[in-house]
Length: 324
Image (tube, rainbow, N blue to C red; front, side, top):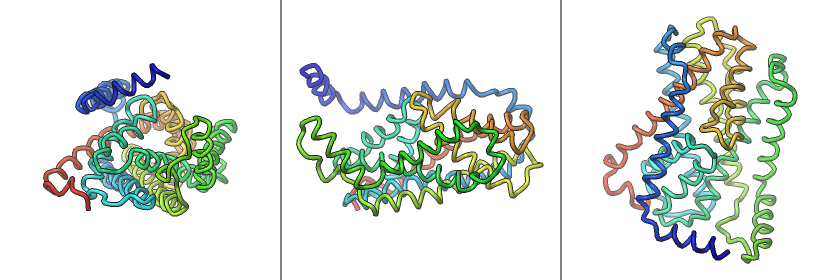
């Protein structure tokens, strides 16, 4: 315990710029490794419909901006007041979102807590809001995906074991997000650690859960539709009604990727699930090319989102970091 206490004291004494440099340095390093894994020759050989890529990018950006809105809505539902402007919230969310490229899903959550810690909101409440946002994303995407694909025989290309694992993960997260379950678990954890009762800031409520889950249901359709247009840009023979299958495919692949704690942005796991499911509606060669393109497009989209949010610091001026 003395060692742990010494480490915590050292962390508190360390300047914030050191953590910022480390955080963004790791993002840059793993992003380079991520890009190196892309088959550039396969990308270069593709004939791409750029109009459809444009539609996909607008739709995908809508999903990312919605994510920032959901995080802000959760904070309000949990009792956080005097939040900064939406521009500031989005800027912080965009930078933390890049933390997904560092192995370990916790980096994405910790990034939001660290970057927003200067808002005057307790880190406990920021952490709970970020956990609730991530959990709601998993639960909503699992729900929508199996709603769309549960009775589709083409889902059989994914093994029964994998389907059951994804269903189990979604159900587990949904159960944990029940306020009574979550709050009781927090109470037991604090009691076990002999740290007294869990503070009110570590509790969630039904309003926050319902708001986050319902909004991420909409978000699943947004991002799934964006992926459909990316795939359609290189697979012109795809039918418009296949959009529902692609939405479900994206949802399941994203959930599988989020469940892989040591893969940057779910790399490998997410792509593997996408590839397997896409072979149900197109030849394997096209499915592989589409999967590679979706991966590259998602990286470009994240960087575009990050770039678009940075000017908010100047557009909103000093008020961007004032509480409103």
